[in-house]
Image (cartoon, rainbow, N blue to C red):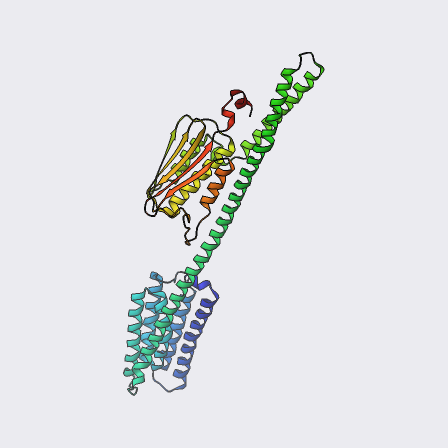
Length: 403
């Protein structure tokens, strides 16, 4: 039996089929013994033989739907039934359970052919035994065959629908688990970025200022001043704690920025985003400089969001990502040839509502003193440009080495 045999409903149906066929065999044998017919012993013997063949097939593990063993078992069962049908007209009652067996165990076209032959044999048996010809002699076997076909095919359709629903539920459960994992990961990364930004903007900058002030104080004191040693130790402690704070910031940066520069992270992002339907190119303009972690995070997240819009909403076939370093500022440009949108309303999501990507990008740029500009129109692609001022640390080499 197939997987349906393990369900409570199919197990109950199988037991009912066993009971029906065996009950009809017992009823036929009892009628043959109770009525004075010449072939009663032979009919009883064939009834017992059919019960034995049926029990052997029902218990055999090799008798499964659409297998050679099932076809051979049905052939043996049909041969015994035909012999019984010749001896006793009561054997035609067995046609009804045989219909179900044939439809369940044989392929569809062979099952229908077997049901047709079985119905024809039942009608022929009725005529062979000299029974009174009436519409019921033809309608009974044919109606039983029709009911069997409708029942089996209807159950198969319900089973397939149930399997589709089960697979859908399993897929939904799996997708929900993946979504929960992705949300946890996103929340973890967002918290890491926030902590890195807070540590950099508060502790690291404060320790850097303390170190600069102590260095200036140390230079202004005479070498033999009693306070010089204390100032030096304070400056060294501030320097050690600044290094520790910077290590925390590096540990909390996004994974894409852990193994290389911002340019390398953007290049990997473009390579990952490239697909058979979308080609993404990356280019660097100007001389790259080392950037603070909040700058790198903001630019990387802006590129990720802009490319996500190009993939999910714009249906673009080509995109260009350019990182430009200038004297006092740097910019990131993401240009695609997608379907575009109205910048006043923002790119719609799949439900037709305005998304949160552009406001988030604009907020990141504004938090670092930069600007975000968007140029787009329906059918004309989209250009997203974020411009940030370079940190003041680039202006003095001494500060650049300490901040």
